[in-house]
Length: 193
Ligand SMILES: O=c1nc[nH]c2c1ncn2[C@H]1C[C@H](O)[C@@H](COP(=O)(O)OP(=O)(O)OP(=O)(O)O)O1
Ligand SMILES: [Mg+2]
Image (cartoon, rainbow, N blue to C red; front, side, top):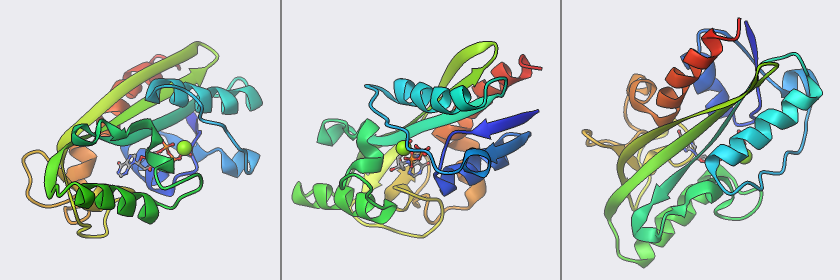
């Protein structure tokens, strides 16, 4: 079964290709660049917007989208659904990470609880389905290590002492928000054939 991935984030594409035991093709390989406006009010809405935008252009296919981000309760839940544009529209991963580090530093917070959320949407001829996954841990006021992507160098998962930038990639594959949401998505995909 071929799955079209409605994402242009390389870190996500790599993780999803490794986690789903199926042929996963990024939409850009089929359709080229498309601008999708993520103006939903939740991770779930944004995942559905992305999945539908690609499905409309390739009907009869199976399209999977991921909308995700990190939330810090001590900062009122920031950046949440705005994670990709925290440092402004078109900001890089490094700029967003630096902005979150600066916010913690401004408040003299060295370490505070945080969680990642992933919403997966699957658009298919059988309808649209969504799943979620979460990963709890803490964020720190500096970046350590260069594994993973996005906010990973400042995120320490619960039960560990190192950041996802430092930990073996196998750890993230086992416990991440995306891994958990994809485990549920696989159950949906099994019923597509
Ligand atoms: O496991 C993760 N490890 C580190 N950072 C992460 C992770 N998961 C999401 N994030 C961050 C990256 C980005 O700042 C935002 C996702 O934003 P989001 O709109 O879903 O993705 P995106 O714009 O990068 O790619 P696309 O929409 O094409 O899938 O949250
Ligand atoms: Mg996005």
